[in-house]
Length: 211
Ligand SMILES: [Zn+2]
Ligand SMILES: [Zn+2]
Image (cartoon, rainbow, N blue to C red; front, side):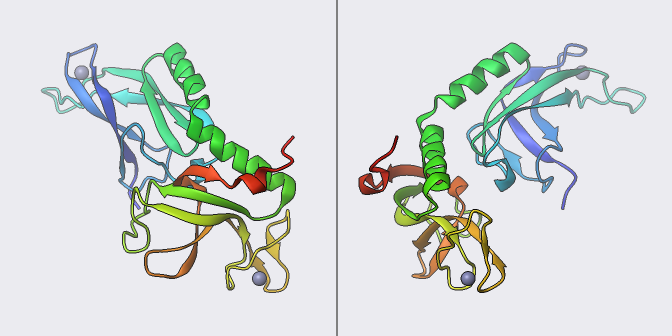
């Protein structure tokens, strides 16, 4: 575990005190695993259902002659939607505009549709998804590859479906996992969180009767 993560700024921030351009922002908002994120990247899984502006600060890293850092700093807002970093802004109004734009993103709407549908029916939903992030397991999922699967709540014991709003399998005394059940690249049945994927389609028959 590190002490922070880094965000690569889309455009450098120029220190108002000394004019030095900074390209990296250190943040402690996420898992602090010394990861480096860019706009568009998937963040830590716990941000998956979050639509938020994280307020942060950027500091100038220029060393002064006495060894201290330049006192230049500025507020910055990190726009997070659907588990992804969708913007970095030095202006609060611009950050809000970016957040509203993110809300109109088709992918986000598709995920919400799926989650709302599942919450209503508590039945598995057949989906086609495209991998956005293999979470560091390239032998199990291939980025940009499409997979057919079922979205739902799965018991980690044999990955059977759990029809329980409490997300608990009482037969095996296990907490169920919400995600897409699919056959991975090693031929194994596995469940992955929706944040790993872009939802390409939700099977029509599963959407019948949608109000
Ligand atoms: Zn400075
Ligand atoms: Zn079970």
